[in-house]
Length: 269
Image (cartoon, rainbow, N blue to C red; front, side, top):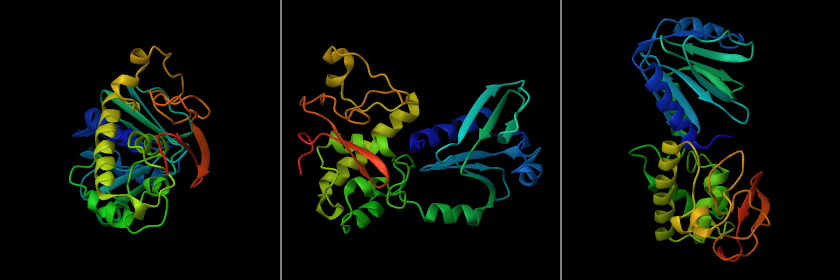
């Protein structure tokens, strides 16, 4: 599932390609046909993200709410658009660009109040200006749930996925099994600030890089990471490989229905 930086980048891509322009809106698959007919020929005024949720604003308090889930894909291209396949849930086409959406968990036409309800059930997003980390801290500081599970709970923090979860805990030497209530306030403040910085960089580069300059392949004289997800990381998907910092073995285990990765030596209980 895409992490929050990907969705914020998609919002920026929509604004750049279609913002302020009248667009053609269709649903070749047919599952969004009625809504597409209402939007066809209107102006896409804005696009924004909150965590893993994308909102396309068409004015008059009218929004398309998209959640990619595990299988959703977005493809952009330059005009002219090729003939769509019958797997395309939503196509947006302008004079110079087109976008195809396939396989999302959610693609719905919603009102402003319905959009507000989505925001209300989500935690603060490190990439949304003005979102208050205090809201997350109030829940974390009272919880017996592990900090690794809390970081993945979108009602606590929106946009953090498995990669950022594993990497930010490693970068701060925090045992993923520590209960939220046992986290110090200064540790939480440092985690939040690091998430803001790392995820902003993810938006900029469209990949997740979390290693510090002294641990890059060039600095360490090691081969670069080869992985479909790209990016240089400390522990994510590195089970049984040596830690870049201490040389010990990276471990993995299931937690909150996802694979957790950590270094027991660097992240002591």
